[in-house]
Image 1 (cartoon, rainbow, N blue to C red):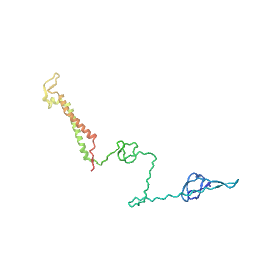
Image 2 (tube, one colour):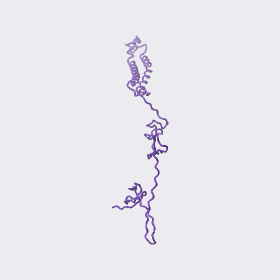
Image 3 (cartoon, rainbow, N blue to C red):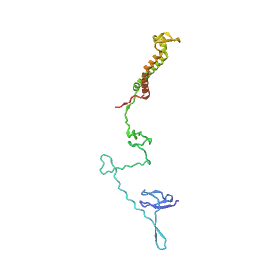
Image 4 (cartoon, one colour):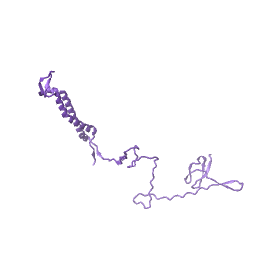
Length: 237
């Protein structure tokens, strides 16, 4: 059987037989459930007679501490008594400094974030992003928004094809086509037909007349079909 040491409870005074391996650790009294550290009490040394044996006096346990008066529980309904004391709020110690949003006090994710993902507050400009409710665009909205872009794209392609055909076919049109009235009755030294107006002049005229419409239609098609391809948001009222 393990050796034990009698140790009195500091609250009720009951002597507990504590094993030696528990000394220095926190134990609980079986009678009053008071928790205390198991330590061997100090003994006062008192000589009995000259030359006699030294007697030891057991140290009396300290008297129990008086309990603090309990405060009445708080009541939070409309009929609360005037004497009711509200329960104090505690502070949770998270063990480390956590970066939080100064607007909603929620944790920033990531800690170095400039804009809070919870409320939209910008820590650099000190402003909060506005939110609004919008209608989800349907098929008709998409069609009405993209149709002008496809129309402008078709016009651009048509003008491009026209310029290519003019470059390839202009001389034929002026020789045996609907522009043959511009050819001359005489031929050059190389045997080719002469023209009152050279085919290159007509090609240049067509290019000059179509270059600006081609630029404008191409810019509109790119903006509507690639950059601003989503329909305009309609705010809910």
